[in-house]
Amino acid sequence: MDSDPLPSVAAAAGDATADQTPPRRAVCHSGCGRPSSVCLCPYLPPSPLPTSTAVVILHHPHAVRRNPLSTLPLLARSLSNLRLIPGRRLLPSSAPLIARSPSSPVLLLFPSPDAADLASWCRSTPPAARANPTLLLLDGTWKQAKEMHAASLPFLSSFVVPVSLPVDCGVDGDSMFESELVVRKGPHKGCMSTMEAVARALRLLEPEGSGAEIEQAMVEVLQAMVAFQAKHVQHRPMKPRVKMRKKKDIKKEEGMNGMPDWCG
Image 1 (cartoon, rainbow, N blue to C red):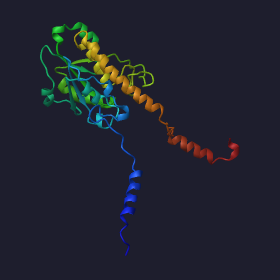
Image 2 (image 1 turned 45 degrees about the vertical axis):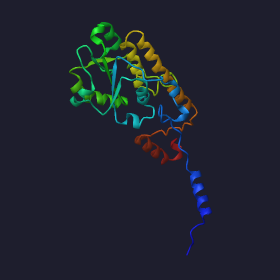
Image 3 (image 1 turned 180 degrees about the horizontal axis):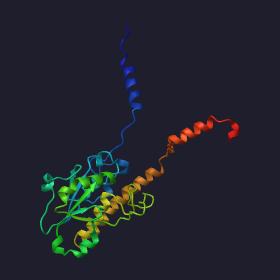
Image 4 (image 1 turned 30 degrees about the vertical axis):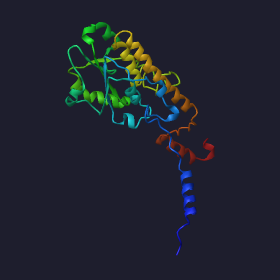
């Protein structure tokens, strides 16, 4: 009968197994939640920034869990008057989460056909009629955001003011190598991350002076995040993509291979 391995042998085997297990990356758990090598805590505001605008974000359930480039965790650490709602649509049961009053409009920031330019809306609306507004955004991929918008409209259309920031649908979006604020390439020129959209909107909505300061503080965090990501991508070996061939091309090649050499 085989005897049990000696303690020294078992320990050595355990050490060998431990050496083969790749160590986990250190994570900044008490701050930004990102890997320590790309920690953004030095760029975050010392304390969340107060705003007169209430920012409410309906984010797709997969927005943070499956998207390592999500800006929502940074937003949560940058703004104090912020509420994150996980889900695929807003319903009447969501009403308590969205403050409404005659002097506090709810602005739905989404590039829909009927949306007014936010800057134009601010110029044409008296300050008393837009004091302490609620800024509502939808966070997810562009496909998810469109689905969330369509699913939420039956509830939102009765009270929200649809607004948007300039988007040029005739021009492709920039990549992170073309703009220091692009987390990932958007479908059109002007498409931006949720964090940048909030920063641009707060510049217009907050009282004169404070809006620009809030925007700048948020933009600096985003710039640092994009710089880290661009550096990582530049040093990562890229595997060539396998070109997918159509069935008709494969059949054509098979037919050519069966021909005599003189058929050219």
